[in-house]
Amino acid sequence: MKFSINREQLLKPLQQVAAVVEKRQTLPVLSNVLMEVGDGQLSLTGTDLELELVARLPLEGEHQAGETTVPARKLVDIAKSLPAEADIRFEMDGERMLVRSGRSRFSLTTLPASEFPNQDEDNAGSVLEIAPSALRDLIDHTAFSMAQQDVRYYLNGMLFELRPGMLRAVSTDGHRLALCDASMEGQSEEASVILPRKGVMELARILSDAGESVRLTLGRNHVRIVAGSITFTSKLVDGKFPEYERVIPKDGSRIVLADRETLRQALARVAILSNEKYRGVRVQLSEGSLRIVANNPEQEEAEEEVSVDFDGGPLEIGFNVSYLLDVLNTMDGTQARLELGDSNSSALITDPEHEAALYVVMPMRL
Image (cartoon, rainbow, N blue to C red; front, side, top):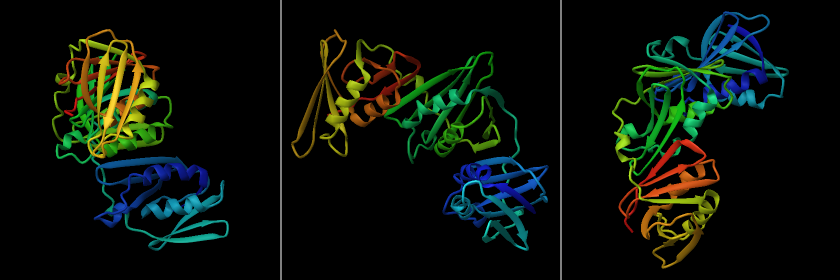
């Protein structure tokens, strides 16, 4: 196995692949990246058994076919430390990989490629083409409300639901919910999968510099996404996602229209003196006004008043201020629309300028 490649061509794909590799592994080979040379290209593969990322790079000049695995982090650090535009030469020497560039020389231990785990090549499933920006938009508007290390493992991820004419992303941690739709003209299939949290985060990273279109395959056990020269495969969470549509409020009698940034800043200031553990604030509504009050065990208090478009009856309701701020930070428009029922009802928050997304925040008892 032997090949040469420019540092700039190698570094970014190598970093993307190495990002999947966990630092602490039960199997030594999982700390390595699989390198395969053949058919005029270099293939780099990283996996943690749940996710797999493959990058394919064209090779110019003389090269010899072969395959091996080398330590992922060390190879990334070597490539980063070399000068810009440097040419890097790789050559197997027995059981070691020799890496040379200019006057620099490195000798890395390898493990046989035969020890590297292979993902099932199961390509069955619903296949669709989608713009990377549309898929990234779904993730950006919903990822914040995924659960972290919840015993209800199916909440530690994102639901992707394929419906006729659209692709929907939903996430919830049981206290709040985020939903976003993307139009898919001509699409008539139906499918539903839960992508694990780490898979969602890695997918968002590779979409930032994908081409004009990505191919998405929703299978029974895997999601596979081909974005340019990168192939991303993730195992799915095996579980049933909650019937989320039942928690979306349908009859909010109080409609509040507020300037998003003004409300966000007011909540951020009041949050400073909220209870550090529970993060609760009281929201008091009256005609044309929204008052936010927070206090903490040290008897400190913060209060803000925001002018809003509201002419309904008065209401006092408690919320976790962090949940409200997460929603307002995710929204893009200049205004926020809140639909509220009574003090025990969840709030439905939408962006009048981005109607494809909606957010539900459950109330708190204060």
